[in-house]
Image (cartoon, rainbow, N blue to C red; front, side, top):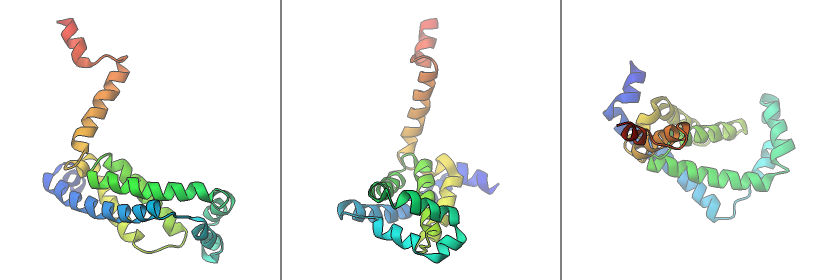
Length: 172
């Protein structure tokens, strides 16, 4: 019953819009500061590698950071900065809201695994509601137009590039 409320109710969509804007603003401010300020994740990644709690609790994640992320710190710096910015913009404008929320929650968990608490638990809690609501979370945003457009685009591709309306008109 609650899931149905989250996924279909216009008042729930309004509340989710406020949550989206709040979480999106948090991501945009974090990402914009990194994109415009010459951010480097190398120090942060080295801190994760040198954190014994991460090694003890999440040895596989520690191995990933040490063996892959640190040698590719420049790539990770770029991905984190722009990822935060794009997740925030997606949530603020309500465009591909579910995808933006998914990638945001993945970054939140990556930060938690790395031993960073900060605002990540709150962001995860709020983002769960956005993910559970699906398309209704973007009802009052760009998803109102983007989702139907993408569905039509996919249907056109499945029909060999011809629109369904064109097929109906040609049949008549």
